[in-house]
Length: 223
Image 1: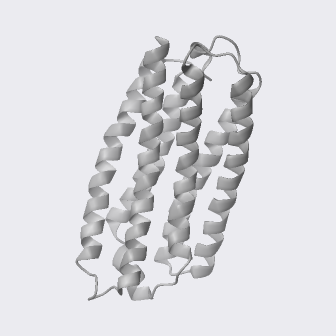
Image 2: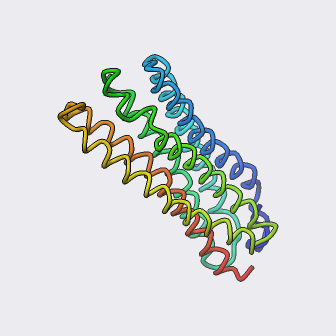
């Protein structure tokens, strides 16, 4: 991974980079399970999944700190060291936002009717599935940086395109919730569900931010 844009191997950091990305993917993938538990109105499972995501996010933080140390001692082309750090930060933020999204739901029980206003909507399932696929596409763009930079750049640009599509789903769902505030949703419940949508959207935003760094790294290296 990334040998095309480094002047020397990253001194054992490469495996940690792969591990970190897998942890981030695992945290985002659990959002699908969270959605299933919410639709089933299973608060015990919702809490368990939220804690699993938080645990993965903590593990990812620890791995990132090890990567930071490795990058500090590694030898990269001028200017790329800072870009690697920016990329790792953006990737790490993805897991952080997945944790935030899960905790927004898990910290306060809503009524079944209130949960049904959002969970079970096909647009929400499409948004969650699209977010997972977006992060997978980001991972593919990173892996391709070492094999085919043109393809890596195309994947990074596809991340940006798909993030814009997810924005449309976000707006639809926010409008859907707003139309039901006070009639079907208590004010606190409306804010809780709205914040869940916003945090879910942040997962995609951080993936797009990471893809922007990938693009900059490829262009800067001239690979």
